[in-house]
Length: 232
Image 1: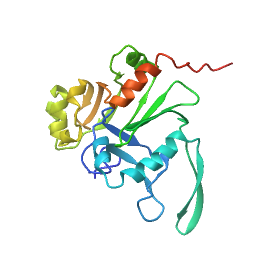
Image 2: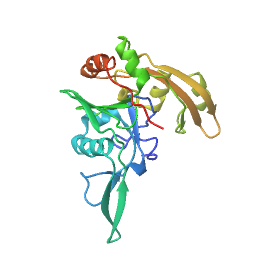
Image 3: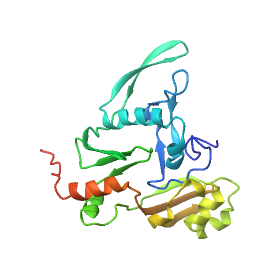
Image 4: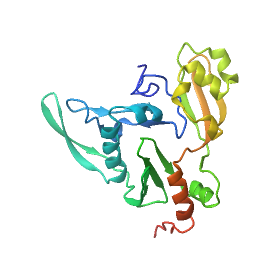
């Protein structure tokens, strides 16, 4: 694998970050790799399609759910024969609003944010904009944002600025890791490419591939939920 940030920690192929199809588990998340012997943590990029078929998916998701729905906890890990106490963060998606067959949905306890955790592995975070769209019968879109990545040397740099998303994923050898992406009508835009260091800055706006169960539930829920109002 090239590094934790651009190589999938499951399959090893290059990860071009596309919301809804990929994820990045930061080191500070302290997600315990409970399926490995010894005290170790999972960190780095992954294709969500790889997570779906991974033999350690259930163990990963159990730990991920604890972190995302919790409020932080102390862990004792051993390094060099010495125990150390570290603080694992929690992300406060503590209010479950749906316990479904294909997914569970949680609301953040301090802000208007929602987390969709699917049984197959992929997860999605939503805000008021996405819920407003669902309430009106429209798809939930990720509006795009700045992504920055260093491309591998074997990608023809002079062609990168003119490539569309399909061409770039093909050149990276990981197109098959993004199933269903083209049905989600991605809008890919190159912001800047530095050929000398092979650094690409780009944006992808895309329709999030929410499970049907989540879409149907949130379409009704979005018309009735009470926004969180923070008091002075």
